[in-house]
Image (cartoon, rainbow, N blue to C red; front, side, top):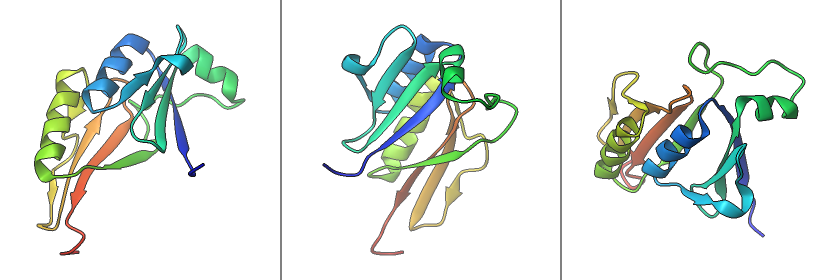
Length: 133
């Protein structure tokens, strides 16, 4: 079995969050989803586990951060092309997120756009030409 990562994120509106993650390319795994959480598969090794804020709070003794007011983590997702970065950034914005929360980064060999989901979690959508890097 390959090493995997499951990124658990608190959300205020599970349906809205699910739409956003589907828009940026995730597939919902109904087997591990219910009225309190949605398992959103990004790849064979990466899954975003969305949990309603009250349910998420049962996982930790610490206060749950409000990602609209604080930066908890920046999640970078590799995309196959510059056009793919643009397509997913625009799709995320159209699905309730916010694209370009900071300036786009274009270094020629690397292209990056920062997108925020409806709950304020930040994703760095990035493409890199490994041969030129």
